[in-house]
Structure formats: C-alpha cells, structure tokens
Length: 380
Image 1: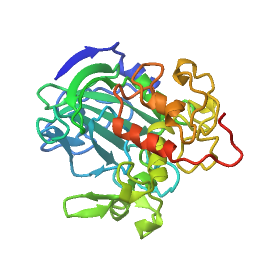
Image 2 (image 1 turned 90 degrees about the horizontal axis):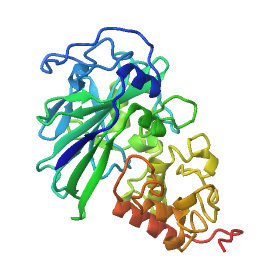
Image 3 (image 1 turned 180 degrees about the vertical axis):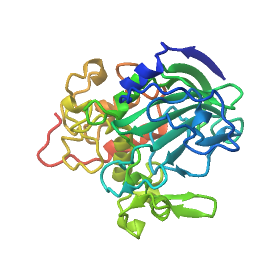
Image 4 (image 1 turned 30 degrees about the horizontal axis):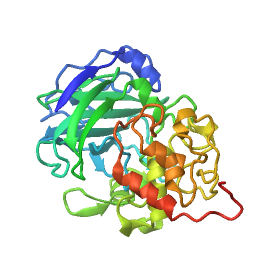
C-alpha cells in the first residue's frame, strides 16, 4: 500500500546542475511518450544535456509484472553485496554507447565513457517472502555520464506501471510490506532529489558525482543473460565493453556476498557490507572524511575502521557510547547503535533508508562480538 507525499519540486535544469551539472544547452524535450516496440537506446540525442520527461523516452527497459527487462544494447548486472534500501527489490542496467569501452580497474568504480547510462529500478511486493507476487515498480534512478561527469535524477512509476515520470525534486512514499523475515514494516521510502543524490555520489567531496557500486570486486559474479550463468566481467569483455580484464575472473578481486557464508568469512562479509553501505562517505576523500573513519574493505588499520576510536562530533548519534567499535562489546559500540536506529540524526546511513535491516545488524553485531582486541589498543 502506498501513499504519495511529494516534496518540493525543482526545475529540471536546476536539478541537473545540482547533481553534477549539465552542458546548459536548450535542446527541445522529446515527445512525452515513446513506442517501446521500435525505439532503441538511448532514444533521444538530448539526454546528455537534459533528461527527458518520461523514462520510456530513453528506451532502456520494458516494464512487466513488477520488474523491468533491458532492451537490446542494455546490459543487466547484479552486485555481490548491494546497498540496502528499505528491502526494495532492485534491477540494475548499464548502457554504453556503441564503440564505447571501459578500462579494467581493480580498485575504483568503472570509469564509463560519455553517453553511458546506469539505471537502477526499485520495486516492492506486499510480502517480500514472495517477491514475485504482487510486485510493483516505485522508481528508476538514472545516472548519465556527460563530458563533465555524472548527472541524473529519479523517475517515479505511474500507478498503471506503464511509464515513469521525471521527478527531480524527489518525494517520499509511505510503503507497507512484510520483510523477508516475516516482520511487518512501514517505510518512509525516499525517492531522492537531485541534491540528495549528491550526498552519496559525491564520494570524493570534489563537487562532482561518481559511481559507487560498479567496482570490479562487486561485479565479479555470475548472471544469467538467457543462456545460463556467465561471469559478468567475462560477459562485458566479450561484448567489447570491458577492456584489459583478466581472462580468468578468478584472477580479479571479488567482494563476498554479505549474507552468504560460503563466499567469505564473517570478517570479510561484514567489511563488504560496511564498504557498500558506508564507505562512499566514510573514506579519506568522502563527505564524512572529517570524522576519521575509513570503512573501505581493504583498510587494515583497526583505528581507521573505528576500533577503540573516540567519536568526532557525533552528538546524539553516539548514544552515550564511548567508542565507534569496542571489540567483544557490540551493545556499547556506536556503530551498532547507529545501524540499529531509524531515528533521524542517529541512524546510519543518514539517507536512503527509514527502517532497520535486522539481518545486517546481526552480521555486524556478530562481527564485533568475535573481534579480538588488537595489541596496543585499550577501549577503557
């Protein structure tokens, strides 16, 4: 069940500038609807300077039964460990212009050429224990690579599920559902404005937006493209999109799936979850860099990940707890306190969720419980 509560609307031109900037050209907007049976991506020549009013104008995907399918020329992908967004079901796609290539980089998010599009569609079902029953589309977030960086906005799906409208000002939707554990939930689900998208995607505090999830280590997994499972890096290389990748994907780094113990140790899976959900801000160049945390999975310095580290200007977010992480004592650690809260000003991450993910909170709790106190540190 959904109830719509739109927030302040912005003009498209101002919105795109706030989320990374546009070229400022004044090309005419495309028609308000597009014949999806015949159009090919990206559907419009003006999309790099002004996103069209309807998602269908981009010709990226076709909606069907609460999900979306990529059109020819658009590549679906999955992540080993995804960002948590109030238990939303997600479908991800990449479009790279014909002839465009992406250089293999085993550390940063893939640097796609101008004209590339990354789209992420969010859906819910009344009971997420049966995600294929009654699922409905909520929004599709679109990021476009322009000559000056990434820019984008969200499209909100209409009640008839046939198309989605550009919504640069964002909105909040009240969504009720049963989560995978069988618990009834109510989400104040945020469709982000173009200003809010920068709070996550300005990962280097340089005023421009960057991709987050599309790293080699998070893409290094299998996906069924219609002919059985195939490694995603291999698939992109075979399409001529990814250049320089090792022939054997086992030679590339791989982030574990946070909720699959067969893919990594407890420590590795907890660090993977923290990297994906927190490190876009908590890194030396991120928006939260003044706080001194670096939650990138490769960091080995225990203080940098919060062990026996005093909070910096946390205020009520500290909850009276003395350190970010106290090995063996999750109940007195700031990290679990903030991950276990849905109160604005306390909850972490601060944007993108309104309910607590009990499963990942348990993962982090277990991780801190078994964590030994590093030599030379004292949390007392």
